[in-house]
Length: 251
Image (cartoon, rainbow, N blue to C red; front, side):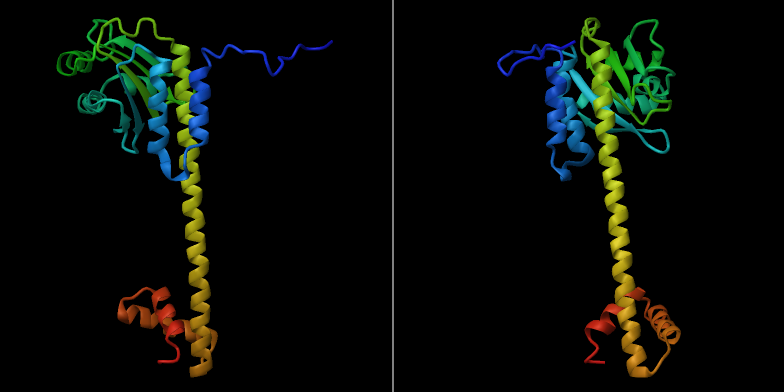
């Protein structure tokens, strides 16, 4: 049995996949220094193609205290809506992050069946946001999830034709990219701390060698002298060692 394979000249319809292909390419080529903010800005840039009815898009992360931190928003109303959720203690981001199963919440904000009546009424009246689709990150992960992507519309029926599956895939892209950046940052921090520790150990060893040679001290005695000098001068032990090593001819 053989499978037909497209030739180089065959055209493949990537209409539905195109926004995600472009997003994956943007995330892959993002500079290392872009960080979480750079990732989120690229996600928001792709959101218009994924959910055309969204007038405002915001991405929030959940802090250790449960508060929402708006990483980026396409319009000020998105950040204001996220702040309002924290103020009243309810809203679509909270629902998407804490819901069992696939974390998605879609409602007209001011409708009577919305699960957050206080937030919905104020979001519609004060911010002009009448519909919202919120997806948790990771969409299928165990709650509480670490963040959410919010798609807001200024029209009550603005998101009726929104493809929830595509919104979920976008949230999954965002979650994966953000988690990767956070892991990379943590790994770089650990590596930096390790290198600093190794450098400190080396320079302290050199300082001990200077004292052992010039003062006839043992290794333990030399280290004790460095430690006491550090305490007396209220200067870090590594800085005392660096001074001793770099200015040995002056001492």
